[in-house]
Amino acid sequence: MEEKKLSRSRKVLTFCVVTIIIIGSLYLLQKLLVPKYMTDIVEGAMIAEYYDEEHDHDVVFIGDCEVYENFTPALLWEEYGINSYIRGSAQQLIWQSYYLLEETLKYETPDVVIFNILSMKYNVPQNEAYNRMTLDGMKWSSSKVNSVKASMMEDEKFLDYVFPVLRYHTRITELNGDDFKYLFHKDKVTHNGYYMRVDVKAAENVPKGRPLADYSFGETAYKYLDKMTALCKEKGVQLILVKAPSLYPYWYDQWEVQMEEYAKENDLVYINFLELQEECGLDFTTDTYDGGLHLNLSGAEKATKWLGEFLSKEIGLASRRGEEKLETAWKKKLDAYYEEIDRQTKEWQEKQNGGEK
Image (tube, rainbow, N blue to C red; front, top):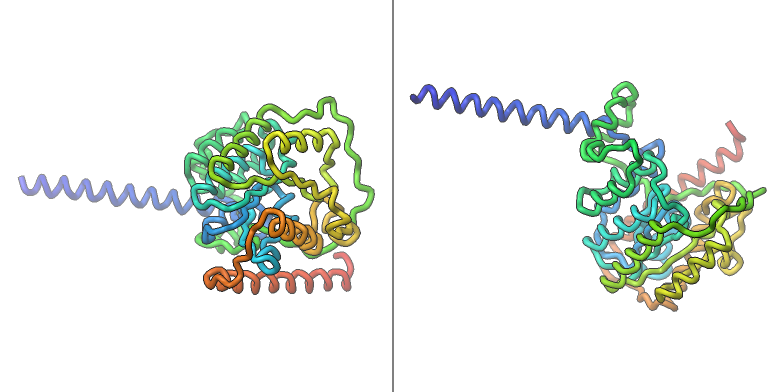
């Protein structure tokens, strides 16, 4: 009898060990195969960086590249004492923004949420690769589940998000040094969500918008904007809608009217930075790095200064300079911010002096 019990115990132990080895191996394989977004398409690493933050922000930005490339939290802190973070990702669709906001409000309750409204132009899912750059970085929660379901293309499967190894198994033949270097850690690619570029490419021959058959924003887009508005009011957060000063994609007058009307009907602040270029001091011969699609550091700091003044004087956000914990955190962040400015500036100058290669 004792021998049978011992044999049974050994079998159970063997089964458990084998199971642990199999699960551990699959976990490591999955971490190896999932794209690292460290040197190529770094936008895919942005969403996950939020979880390493102290969740005590006065302002949280939500949206696409028109927030994470056009506003810089470092300047909001340095000049106005406003602690902010940008939860941005490439082509972030409005339902993804809503569920990111929903998730964020489980971690903290900022005074202000700023949402860039360019994504109102999209009413249906667009692209799996962009979906992944937003969704893969989210921690699992009901917000992520719902965001995945709302975002999937027709040929995508929910299980591929639960077990990314199913989606990325073919990368086994494409692995490179980054996949091993960043297996267990990742470098920061943003500064509180801001993606920095110091190089310059003047805006020239910016295309005008082509006439559309219908200028109305879609039912789904309005549905999630309504949900965002309602959630902010429920949580006592002031929602501010913005249109960043990007010259392209084109922002139609008909879209502007709809946003102005929506803001008025829902008692929201709406700021169109396209109308504030002169007031901000923006110069698209020097303040963009890609011909007017996004601002470079010079442009982002100009737009941020205007916004900081507005948040301080019109919204009434008080400076938090002098709070020891925040001062210590931002000292380290500002050191990294200015080191990155120096590094990129040096590279840009060397490229200018050496010519295109």
